[in-house]
Length: 215
Length: 418
Ligand code: SF4
Ligand code: SF4
Image (cartoon, protein in one colour):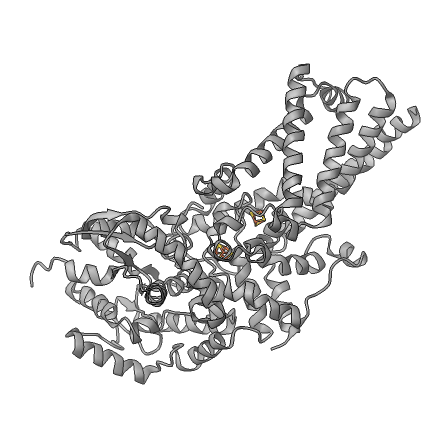
């Protein structure tokens, strides 16, 4: 069992992290190298200002769209914020990333904080997935990879919760194996939206910022 | 025209911006509520996200930085003609390229831009709707989609000059301003054409029409035919250079304004060397400078923001500056400005018989918006929106009291030394 944990936290983790790092870099660089317009029209406003505006503005949905989008947005925020809090502040993560990998430490979540963040993250993810399998448009347009991304993330979170008490080495090994799989697959998957949302909003913002519109 | 050319277009037009959109889309469907055609039909296939799935497939196989891997794994396949034919409904009938869905998308994805690229591919495959294709071809040949060639232009300007008692200079050697107009104004909304001329004359401006380039509307942007789109803007650039114009004035034609102001640089490969303004933008500038004074009338009117002038063109405040001085009670629709609903006929949709049912259904949203303001009428600043309103209102027997911004300015401008 120790061998499994050693593998999952050692060679496999480093392999997955390398694939993640190189894959993300390859994808984002390759994407930017695909090129842009041959010439640009005379600006009416600031493309850079527009990019920043749109990147920030789209964090908050416009009020007119809220009646239809409300639950989706709430679930999205619950999941993403919950996940980021768990990722950055759960005690075992601080120990692993901070103390073991980076050699620094930062405050950790108390037990109740972990539970609240985990509840938000699970509730959000489950609602998002329920919508994916029930709403007609999402059913029509979702790819197998979209479902796989949800499920893999779910399993990573679930195994992480089970491993929290550190009662069984095998649970920690299972969590780490799933994390390795998640990292390995990340650059090839819809999970890449973690990074590409900045490009997507940024390009739109720059295009319309040039036109003097804040979209 | 062939599938090969279509494929080339799809691939070559998928640059960094489009790739980012395709990679960022999380298939959440939030864009659907923003689209008037989806609202009208309730058909999930009409959701914006469905309109770029074809590009997504092509991107994965040919442009994705991991494309070799996907091909090796046998993922996806290139589209066939039958599939493209079926796409007509999504790409031409149920998208006016209004850009409203971008505002609802958490990723800020510009579906309208991707629909334009898909239209390019469709046109390259010879699959653009025949009615649009014919008009585009006519535009390339005669200079205008309704077949107004230079000789016909002369006749029209003579007729308008006589009928409305206004001078319409044509082919002056030198002029500061080159005025464009759309076929709809040349043929149907001639009072608007006369009004533009009256305003420019009264202000003592040195302007002209040119037989070299006079047509603002650009059917190439409707069909997706890049050659036509390029030829139309090239004519305008040549005409402006010939007369030495420092300003090219785009008329009340949303896509016409967009094509010369925002698309021309990419189409031509260089930045046109003159200023390009929408007529409302130009008039607002003169108004701000105190050169154009307006008499306010006791009326309650609302304003329909043309998508390609406002949301996609950046001219949102300028018409409002004018309207606040034109009417005592200017009422905003809800929502308005960049969030305004499309008239339902843009992007060539109103010209397509196949789209008529869904277009009319989508127009109901507009009707509700206008009626909710309780205003006496609605002001237009785009001939295409105007035409959509006219034809749809007629269908519903709806009296919406359409007014035209430029005509109002011409009627209510204060002529001090007259
Ligand atoms: S651009 Fe406008 S018409 Fe086209 S899909 Fe988006 S909202 Fe609908
Ligand atoms: S709202 Fe944006 S991210 Fe969501 S499905 Fe539509 S285009 Fe994709």
